[in-house]
Length: 200
Image (cartoon, rainbow, N blue to C red; front, side, top):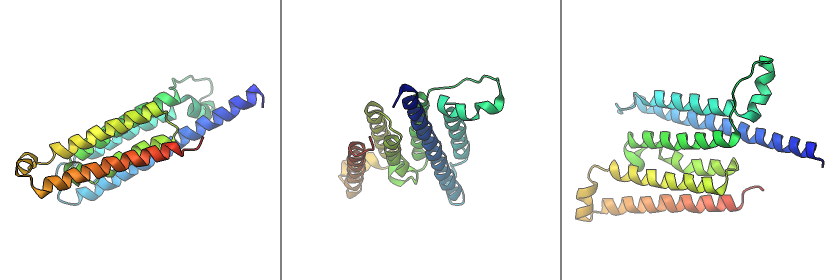
């Protein structure tokens, strides 16, 4: 295979990864939006800012992905000779995952913390999505570490009776510590297995 053919295959591969990132991000936003809509029908009264947060996340992350060099080349001919700025796919994915993790942290923090929030499972699918989008190991490790810290902080800070219960050595604390351990150990195990068996 000559250099031109190799470049074409590589380009198609990048376009496919970016397209997969667009699909995954859109699906993630739908999950967040539906969960927020469901909660707004219930007792929660602190969800008023959630739709704006999700909308802002969608506009920024999808915008960056649409303006990556690979995807822009698909719709650029529609604009003729008008030149628009672009961003590398790698940088766009980094921004997307960092903003996703931050957004999930905010949603979890304001919806009863890691132990009770319906958004907590999103913490654990983000590193797996990163693997399927061929993120390098250094970034994957960053995502897992950040998710672990945020999950732990949201678990402790949003437990109103944590200090009292800890002093009393209550079963509630033991249960939450066990929940923390099983959650993060499962995240680590799943991430390592998915990374080790990822398509080459």
